[in-house]
Image (tube, rainbow, N blue to C red; front, side, top):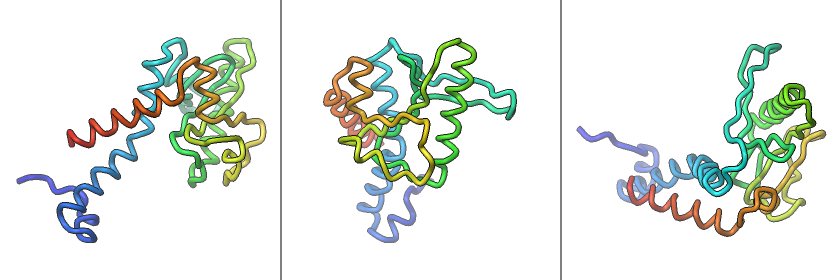
Length: 166
């Protein structure tokens, strides 16, 4: 028996359209992972998925990218207003503090909203972003010496390949 996907979408839109929307929704959820993979391939000089144990809280903290004095939490979109935003901001702050002590250099906690067009789109968080650097995807690509348009095109192409294969 085949596994049925997207029961709610199928109910609302019918089998064919509901299945297509369900696959697209699943892909949208995974698109951030595709972005990270593309950037890692294009800019191997950075550290990716860095992890540090926080002894005070007995848990592991992580940063998507560590490079050029920044511990970066990477988000594909241009909004970061989820319920877990405050925790993610505090985690990247703590990660930066821990790695700064370990390495003996100042590491800035940074959040990149990759599709933000400008600094104005980086405002509007539901959490306190003081002491955090907020950057756009253009700024991240400049930091890593890679082309923003090429990254977006590569993410789109990979996402379409995955959608066609599902």
